[in-house]
Length: 68
Image 1: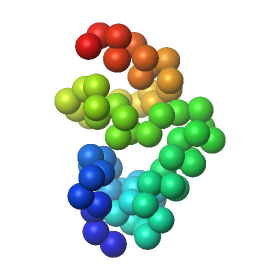
Image 2: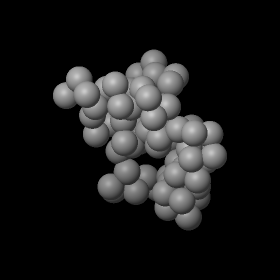
Image 3: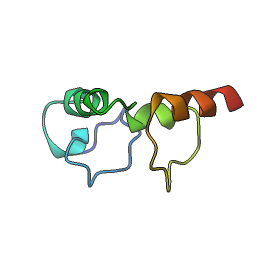
Image 4: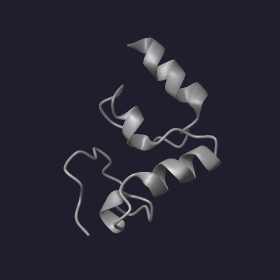
């Protein structure tokens, strides 16, 4: 598989990254929601880098968004 042109996620080591299967974003979104998290691509819309992030919660996303 190859990286999807619209996907900003650089974590291609993740098994759910669209670059690693042929199911698009479905697996990533499904896994994130099961874990009570937001997909990494949403974070990349509100911050330049997700390097070192470990908290993908709705609360962390909201705090980053409010800083904008």
